[in-house]
Amino acid sequence: MRTLMSEAAWVHYGQIYVQSGEHYPDLAECFGGQRNGLCGAAVPGILFLITGLHTGEVGFTVELYDAPPPVDDSWQEVVEASFQPIGETGLAGWGGEGYWPLDLTEASYRVRYCATGMDEAGELDTRMEEDPEADHYLLQFWPAPPEPDGAVKQTSEVAAYWHEFAREQPPPPTPEEKAAAEQSARAEEERAAAQAQLEAEKEVWGGRLPSQRLRNVGGNARNVAQLDRSLVDALGETDPVTQRKIACWVTRRAFAEARLTEIDWIAAALDATDRGEPLPWPLDGDDRRAWSLLFSDERVPRTVVTSLDGRLSNCLQQAMAFPALFSSREQDPLSAALDALWNAAAAFGRGRYQVLFSEVRQAFPALAGSSPWAGN
Image (cartoon, rainbow, N blue to C red; front, side):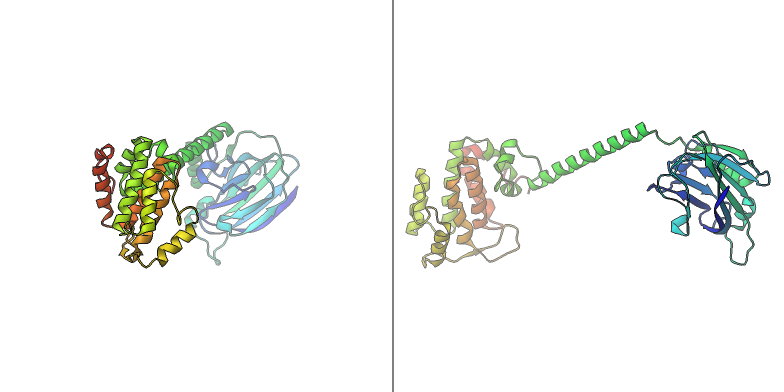
């Protein structure tokens, strides 16, 4: 026999543990399916030990044997269970209040938990420094194959209560049941994540999911959808020729709103767009040159609008409209129309972009059936 520990041990909430591995002791789980309620061994690598004293120091001894020791009848409570450590093992108080390493190998053990004075300690509840020891415990280990737990001796009301508690707990899940539960939990997490992603997509698309065609367009499709989802849906259902015409019409309307149509190099670009021709100089590829000319040409008006999100009230209207002209470079007619709509809406500004959307519906009968400003 070898004594692994023998001294006063601090307990709280009437419990102390033998711990190994990373699993945290849970009362119901550790006693699940057991017949004894003092030494919970249903969870691998853990012994959940009940004490009569709620809070304070108890006498505690841990012994290791090579063979089963005889039962000492002087103990009032005796229970047995099986235990196999998972790595480093120690006796641990609640909340880390005390730790005593136990020199146990990762082998299969039978453990006997003995107690005396549980009722007296239960009545005391909390032991102060001046109080004499009320309860004492002995934990014995010896090598043995696993077998069911049992209550060898019971005399106290405290032990009777905990034995009854243990017998009411359902057995812990089998490894197969745990694996199935984990798989089900993962599937539920994945389903919830997918649903959350769909809800997030609905929000950025103005309240409902888009068609695959709109989803594939990207660009400013979502931005326009947040302003007028029904218009975007109707636009997505029109034919490519009509979509290209809408892009040209919207671009010219945005430039008229920004009072840019009378400037010669801009007017030439608008005409080329209507004819389906490449943009002429200075819009024929060098965007920096085009923007520089926009800002340096003294004939360009300088008017401001409020941004669509309402955060800025000094957006240069001509700069908001200008990118609509570049939508003619888009090979996809739907993308061109959506880009033109977005930049034109910015040129009209917050509180007035609805005028643009109403006019484009009037100009193109294919869009007239959509309800204006749905989802706003």
